Length: 255
Ligand code: GLP
Image (cartoon, rainbow, N blue to C red; front, side, top):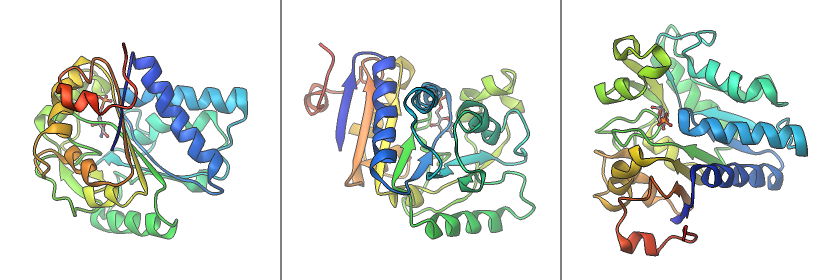
């Protein structure tokens, strides 16, 4: 695992965006795994800027998002489809047929999940999977306990997660859907590279658990420690609960 502790959220976000852009430039037909949440907003802002000002080309990129709420259509303003269009796809030259998110309003959710796995496989697999982390330690929506060989499936959201994500639903946790479709931990671990970004003091405790606690299904983010090509980018605040030993392994630290 490569661990980077950056001085502030801006430099951490910029660094993550640069890692994604470098891969897009190096690979002829890159396949990106994308994530949602407040943490990623700055990453997409930076990528849009690189497209506008430096000509970063999205026309050869295929993307697969981690997850979507069950029951929400792509047009719903609370859906992750809507989030991705508003923050990234409407501003860059992605090919619409190369953009993939699980359909939360599919009539047969199991068939949708199987088809999603199949289309990741047909693309040749994900080159770089971007990850955030939730309060429950989830990556995607892999709530505890999520077996490390889990695949794309329908999950029930933890109440903590519904509270964490309530802001998108007018601040009301009860308005947050109870279920979601998410890539599994096993699906995520098959990506050739992982890139986890966490920002802010509110992530400090769960980051310490994920990076220093037991590796197991109770904290699905701990699974990234089993991956051979994993980069973790933190700001000072999200790294603040890490032990001196872990901090000592960071490749770049503030101060
Ligand atoms: C949601 C997403 C996760 C994301 C998490 C973090 O729950 N399903 O993939 O990591 O939000 O959200 P935030 O960045 O808003 O803290």
